[in-house]
Image (cartoon, rainbow, N blue to C red; front, side):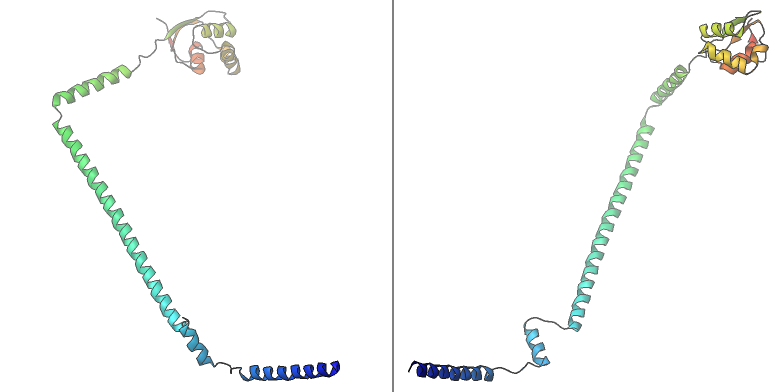
Length: 201
């Protein structure tokens, strides 16, 4: 008895499944055509290639026009600034020229006199020559030492080396010389060897 009910229920389930499958497969729609797809896409906001190219060209033209306007504006502003600066500099130059022309001649003369005095004061007096005597039989070491004491050379040992290295030590002449205070080693060497310089009066 239980098997009988079981088989009856199984058969009923198979029949119901067949009916449901028939209903669902019969209600399936056919595939859409290309025109139908395009129409649906247009309603959803799709645009075609030709329309897209037109939009891109228009956007590019608008962008170029905007950039051209900005560039022209910047150029105009920079030119105005340059012209303003030139006018201001010319006005300042004219004002300075007028002030110079209006300055009294006495002030100009005083200014020139002060400039002349300043120039004369800036000239430093030339140092007086130093009297230096080379004694007979004196060695280069002794002469160099006395020259250092007189402030004519910075280092006695360096000057002695200079005399020995250049052969001046063999031709030193005993005499009373006037040596310029700013003379260098070579000038002093030439003076005390009689090649150059003046004797003291």
